[in-house]
Length: 264
Ligand code: KIV
Image (cartoon, rainbow, N blue to C red; front, top):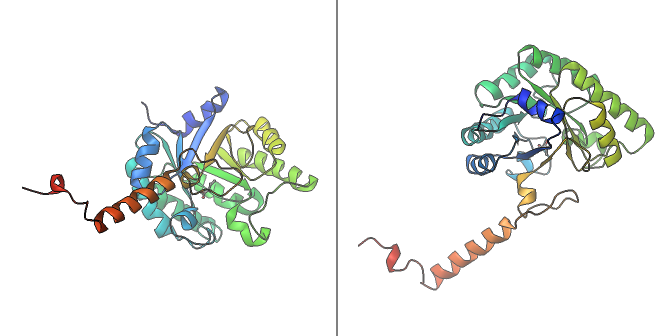
């Protein structure tokens, strides 16, 4: 199977094929997800919450997420690897944005980066990163790095003005040169309208079925998810919990290790 590239990823929209994306944060999960045939893995800054146990995505650093990106890239030999740029790694100046994006590609092994926010705020950073030939994915709607502005994890684009603004922002991201846009927690009719108006893929999370593709956090499909928009495809969390419980019981009751687990 030929490696997924940014142009092939974009072409899937024109071909009418839905794109399937998941997050991953380490080698074993990347290996499984990649082998299953995913189009792209996002090394999301959601790592701060899912793996590091924090309340928000804000505290993860470039070095921390870079470490996870390296482990994901080592396991993902077929799909596109997208690295999230952490909070404050691209807001200060376009120079810092390019330097940090470059680290995710050169050191981390990612193929492209994702930045959160409307083009009026991060357009200069996107231009600078694209000038370094690093493909960029945008992210609109509920952008978790803006959580304190939003006052919580809330659905975005509910009123007319916000809807119109989001449509303009999405068009502008395409015009600037982004190869795709994530739309997070927006009404499905708005997401569908935006998807239809862009020629680049629109990837939804909590944005309904009208997008060109879907992304979910890997743990949310494996039994850890609590959001309305995720679905438990397998209760791996439950399986892990019962496997660990069985192990503890067998050690305590002296049924493990048995003779077959001993060296003769
Ligand atoms: O950080 C993340 O995991 C994300 C997505 C879920 C879109 O940005």
